[in-house]
Amino acid sequence: MRQDTAASASYAIELRGISKAFGPVQANKDISIRVRRGTIHGIVGENGAGKSTLMSILYGFYRADSGEILINGHPTEIPDSLAAIRAGVGMVFQHFKLVENFTVLENVILGAEAGGLLRPSLAKARGLLKDLAREFELNVDPDALIENLSVGHQQRVEILKALYREADILILDEPTGVLTPSEADHLFRILRGLKEQGKTIILITHKLREIMDVTDEVSVMRRGEMVATRTTSETSPTELAELMVGRKVLLRVEKTPARPGEEVLRVDGLRLVDAQGVERLRSIGFELRAGEIVGIAGVAGNGQSELLEVLAGLRPAEGQAWMNGQPLPLSGRDCDAQARRARRIAHVPEDRHRRGLVLNFHAWENTALGYHHDPLYNPHSWKMDNAAIIRDTQAKMDAFDVRPPDPHLKASGFSGGNQQKLVLAREIEHAPDVLLVGQPTRGVDIGAIEFIHQRLIKLRDSGSAILLVSVELDEILSLSDRIIVMFDGKIMGERLPDQTNAQELGLMMAGMA
Image 1: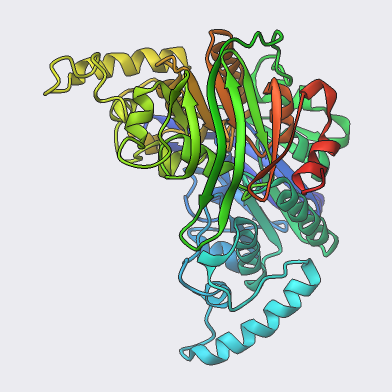
Image 2 (image 1 turned 60 degrees about the vertical axis):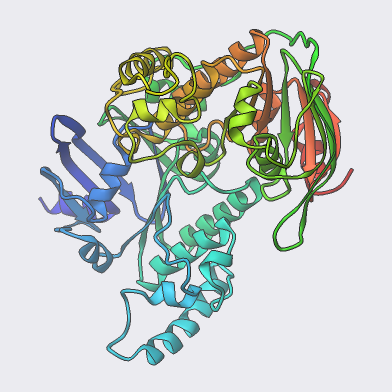
């Protein structure tokens, strides 16, 4: 017994036989895992595998139906998040828990004020924040409003919140899903620094490259069960992918060379100035042909998002554009998303929650969004045929392997990967002449990534033109037939994927031609 206790004490966390069900759905089934103190431990698995549920149990968001939690070798009850914080556990969620109109300092102390007077708490926090920022490379202005910070800096605030509460164990749920490559690199430097200071990190991610780069050990979950734990240096992305999905997975995009046809879309002299007077797009010009994928590479915030929104009819702009040889309005009454769909331009937005779905609507209602005038859905022009929409949604779910294949489930009830499949199915199955697609695999697991890439290639081969925006350089290089690089709202140049590399593209993305 004494030996078992001593062995357990070398682990910061030990979960034994954890099970959790939500109604008929078994989210976690008899899961056991041990995380060594002072290490970075990765947890991978497909969307819906139960990773976030397991960590939410450890953080006190949920209570397990059965099982035991040990912290530093001691059995620990964690009925709520306050108990987790007292046990030294902090969590940074995929969608940050910050008050946007509060300052950094106010967010850090929120819920951890020292007594009833706020001024002493703020003074104490300011000093501690300065020390933590210097020690862990988490520099951020304590008086800045959250709403004015970049996503990367907001994430630093979440980490500072956990460290301010003296967390020794830090859980990060898909931390790079909304970060640029440079922000992700900075985050990993922070995590390595935390590890050197003796902190224990649990990293939930679907990106195998990150697992291989930063973790010491990795555990794999599949359909609510723990299927394997590996020392990272002794495994490979191929083995981890197979363990995650339960079958062999292609980690590269297989495609035949493109056979570009007629010019479908052309823009010239495209210029956009935002409400603050900042020039977001500077004389953009390019063409897009049938049967090709043109990738737009660039660090987030350099105009790619605005370009997609202009072409999708969501923002007015100056300049000229043509679709199938006919003028395409960039401003005025005939420039909106509905008019674009009428011209056979489909759009998969970068943010599926804000732009792609109404989370409180059922799947079948989301399928009709933007296409409610389609004769299939609205044969009499005055009343929508809900039964037809539901049948069509079922067919789309079957074609795109949406799980669960239930048209009556609300969009909020699907995992991120399945939400993305719903949006893609809605836009792709209408066989557009042009598909504008932003961050197609953001926050999506490896099995769904493979599927989405295959569907985009299939659409290209059917003759559609695709304009792809992604912050994932590997995705740009593997999917694109031509690559356009943007920096500070302008095009730095164009490259063919087989005649360039990540280093050259990275220099162009930094503004070096």
